Image 1 (cartoon, rainbow, N blue to C red):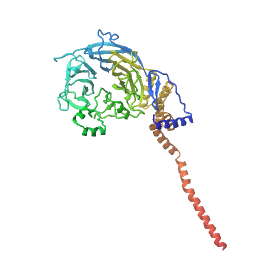
Image 2: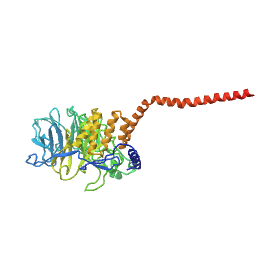
Image 3: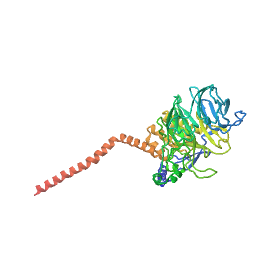
Image 4: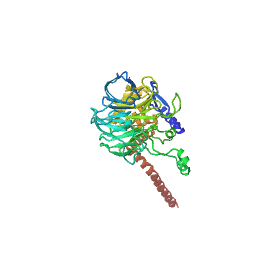
Length: 500
């Protein structure tokens, strides 16, 4: 932690000790945690608990799942790409802890020469009744109706912007409300491949910005051809996964980041793209959206968090899946970490090789490729309170939001965002001085400045007559005193002349 942070922290604590604002520091310890302002890990009551873990046995399948990769949720339906078995499982969730197999999709109807799948890696179901399937090693994206009739396919773009020497191996897809398809393909680092509804290729979008060091650039100019061949190329990074939210924005994640890039702030492992392909992800938290803040080796793990999938819930809350340590990181719409949980292991709530993440309402679903299972998490009361407080604030119920955050504090007195949430609630209720106390408690400088600005304005308005009077006294009294002295001086001089 920087010396500046320590100094500010000590000053804030000193001020708080002189106020009547209570400082609660108890919390139930689980495998859920967050980071405080000092970047220390603070354990928390669990925000999610396991509702069920489903493998081939629980799904009553004759054949065990093999290296599943793709996961999609539509309504109460769950679709799993059983990649190694070249099939897609259509499941229905009948209860929080129950999944029922509806059908196995391993072929489709049509006049195509090949009506089976070869390494399906992703699937999307749309409101207008279509299934889109990444048929990776058949080099196509299939569009089928719900009766599995062939509709059309999206194939390798016949365009100069796409390297014709490369195979078209689609890995992940998203489909918008207009039927446009956005695709991540293997070994393509120019961004998302975009197809129009009719299958026409319309270019790339959302390519990551290239970053490089000027010294490396100059050295490349002076280096020989052999030396250049051994150097890293300045190319955009390849995306791992994507998710389209209800507003049509696309979240993308990449695991192609280094510790040095994360430490310097150059890396952006998670982005939110608008229609122009620009990153609009808000990051107003104390820490960047990178998962764990510490990358020390231990327990067989090494390096930073690497996001392999992301999903977006209500109120722009989003959750990212770390494939290194098997953790899920939830952030609010300002990029503040709400909580992190999970891990690598063979117990319920842990994973061996997590590859895909989805949500159903507030519930989270995680697909494990090595364990060949699907885990469903449901929010605990603590997690529900956090959702409720954020939802109330977004709906304009500021007083109710503050009261809900107070209930969160009764369950976890170390939860920084609850103090900040109460402060924001008070700020919207125009209780600026009270809001300042909560912001000061958790060293939220930005919101403290907003509250102080409004408090100062309010104080000035309430004391304007006093200020005008004080200004009048400060300005006029010296003038009056000077005038009295001048008159007295003239009288004294006149008396002297009369005496003569």
